[in-house]
Image 1 (cartoon, rainbow, N blue to C red):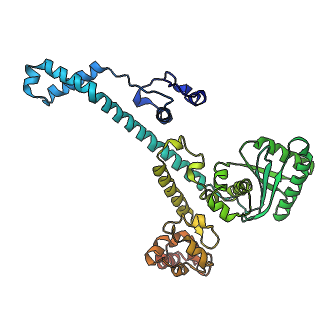
Image 2 (spheres, rainbow, N blue to C red; image 1 turned 180 degrees about the vertical axis):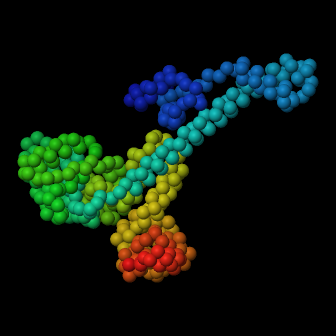
Length: 393
């Protein structure tokens, strides 16, 4: 039932007005929604239980399992019935329903976390754009304009621009967009211009503008729609301000959109996982538990792929197992010529090196440094290659 709350708040829970269902058959999203509604006092929840049936069940077990004194079972059954009724009314009903509901909420939360983990890992392990190419990244908007960023093949920012296209400014916006497309085209090896378009508010209008500009100027383009969830959140973080101290958050968001297309893993590890919109009712879940699981998912994804220790950002280096607190020190000693150079990092001993070495790729004098082979297994790897008449090089 609905409580007396603000109309806008209550409207979120209209689906649960006079809603009823068997506890065992409630869907996870229903459980989490009801729990949130009750917590916000927008919903009232009650349990419909056959008290007579439950009391009879308790009496049956007390008699059959000989849990009650013999005299109550044989001679004073009326007293036993009164005791059961009193216990059920005063304590057992409330405790039983509370326990069942908490167990149901826990199960729903665990499954919701698992869905979030699976979706996050799938997003992080999305293959990078190959071959590497420059990209014109667009963060759509209306009054604020379209934020544009030209990125080279490595994701470095070459140019930033804002397009105002509403009203009488459309022709000027198309001329500026033409110049941006031509600049991006000159940076690449192909005549086709790659455009990363955020899927936020105004993306359709932005797509029409780009397609019209390319058609009028006979430019070949490829538009890729990119999920921009979390880009605006990351753009106002301290890490973003440190990387782009002189840029506005909106421009930083456009940069993030383009980099996501080029290499999703390297960019998404920077964004707080719960801001990526990859799970259901993520804000209803335990923040500590969710953040811990999502951090481990990021670490697992990075470990699966590995990182180039000489070129990767500090954000992704922090996700390498065992390097959370050593990333900044590794950045300071770069470039690294071989994996053994990691031992020069202060605080990184032989045991830590054994744990993290295989996740750090180094393209140098030792070919095995660019593989997933652990350093302590190099001799075995060379022997196997020799047995199969292969060489490391």
